[in-house]
Image (cartoon, rainbow, N blue to C red):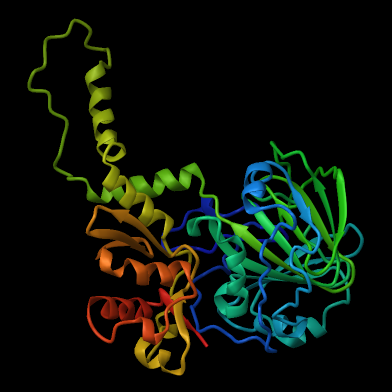
Length: 426
């Protein structure tokens, strides 16, 4: 993503799933999902009423969303980062923190990419300039960061990826690059200079033989210096280059934009798994042909009818798409799964919520039930549970008082917690 973002390997992964900001690294293997970590200092996240200054959300969506960049000065007035630079670097010691360091050696020198985890001693040994630490999915690790997703609650959950945070030493950056999705860049600490080219890149040409995807040609037509609380929105494929003016931190709220290849591949893979292997082409009413070398329309009609079974079946297609969009983006290490029950964990007044923005989705289905998509699977629940599920997904999660002591929903939530789909904030 802006600065740097990679796709996290899902249970079924292919090379096409990775974004262009960095080339695939084998270091992105199975990583555990652990409990969230409290911030190093108590901070109340006083969310602003609007993320876009004098613009309403509707005005932003109609005039800027996927159309042109937008810089909002003091989009979050008096913003205070929930993580100090030291606490952020300390976070990179965790095995489940997807961390990387990008360092440029000298003026115009080579780029070096290192995968975490890191030790504090690693940073002490680095130079005082031209390096950046990036950690993805910090919203999964730090509850106060997760709360920041409320600022983009006007977007569907499945359109959200994660919040990535970067810490850069003076002069640090990751080079000029593009993203294939929308991104909101909130300056959290210090100052950063952003240069952008407001014309979307059509043909991407990269510097060869380096780990980081840096544009070979970059001609900015805007140049801004941002301070804490300033917001820069960038539509897909807008070239941008950020450089730290002294130590700084940037919060990057990245959107999700599945490719057509990903979507069709996922749907067809599911369809293939459910096809009857013994079903074959039949033509009991065949007539004699005078053109035996011609393909003929019946073969095409047969294949079209097979595809139409999926495309024309609204319920089946909804299930397929919901499964695809809720598919987990990371492996779950069984050793990191909770050992206590959800009821026991919630006893201290905490709340349970989804581990990621898109892993739980729902869709109404008929009058008496609705579909709940859970980490690539689907279940049908009675409408009586819809209010609780919406609060779990769209609200602040559920407390122990909002969960029945027994029954279908209580058992269901216990199962999701045991599987790592749900997490409890401290």
